[in-house]
Length: 55
Image 1 (tube, rainbow, N blue to C red):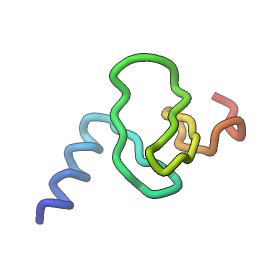
Image 2: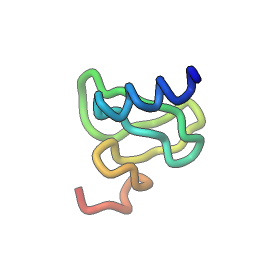
Image 3: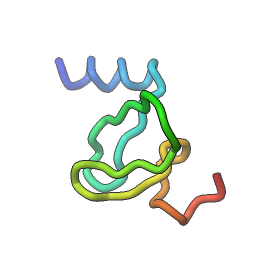
Image 4: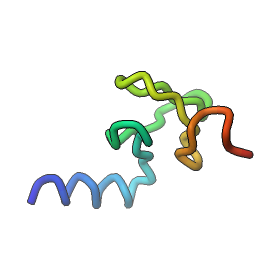
């Protein structure tokens, strides 16, 4: 199924998933502070809500 294929690709490429809406997110450049289209702010490295991790 297509959804599983995208999830598998994201896993092999090291993409993160938004903890708010689980959208796959790829970091092209910049810092690890992500703001998803759902407005959730999180750490790209550990996927914890922003300012709650130790990264």
